[in-house]
Image 1 (cartoon, helix red, strand yellow):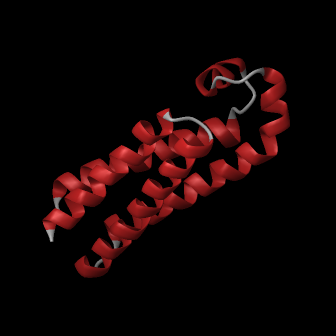
Image 2 (image 1 turned 60 degrees about the vertical axis):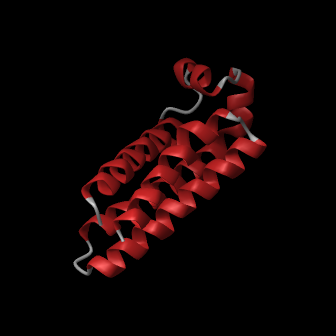
Length: 121
């Protein structure tokens, strides 16, 4: 896998650690509510869902990190494509169902990483 692809997918992984932190660790705090554009009451009602979503984000991070350390370059590339693709799909679904901004924050960076991985051949 190309260095540029690893850098971009590494940044995507870091973003998803941050999403995990927001959704599973500091959910419901005023600053987090502001990031998500929700009220304290909305945060309370969505707390269980947010924690679950945060854990899913951590699974995406684990897969991307696995793609960086796997010793077989061909399998490493497949892992990057699969988990990067999962991030793209999650971002598109999030943009369609929650907030259009998710497309640009989550899906587009992952799509760039996937494209760079494909281009690296």
